[in-house]
Image (cartoon, rainbow, N blue to C red; front, side):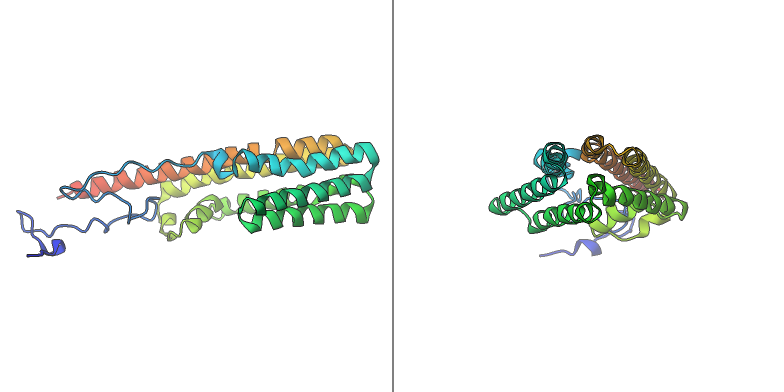
Length: 253
């Protein structure tokens, strides 16, 4: 005879708690995949977390992001602005085609060509090779301001993005320590964007096109990987804090 476990009684008369109840929104595990701890249920092996490099697109993603910039810098040094624009656009189209042939997502392929086309268009319109990097420079300043202001507002953007992408609720903001952890991660991201802006703006003012390209590559995915690690640390710390609080509550009479 089937027995509804939620209606069973413990020895002291209390109902058996539902394993899904009391789960905090901070816990990043999928409830459907979480171990309930019921007798006879084997504990599943923990799912491996993607590395910072994998979350940044892997080695191929790092190389793809650097190639159009490298082509632009080399083309500008060899044949001037027109050659640089043609080289960057041609390489961006080749990369997009290769991604489509590999049946990867269409959006990164189209987005890569679109981004290079906009940057090259601005450079062609102004007649200055350094303006190829203009959007990226000011985008970094805007991101630094947005992330920094989110910390001051008590809504660290690293946490907002993390839980939004995972489809979780916003109740994590009620946990002071969770806000603190994600606040630290958001500050790290703010510093990364601010450093990008400061260095690249200095090189832009100095009209150092080659150095601008190098700075964009070196301060691109490698620094973003540092930011991803900071967010992953905040998520683990917040989840561990939530688990400890849940265990303490379960031990209360």
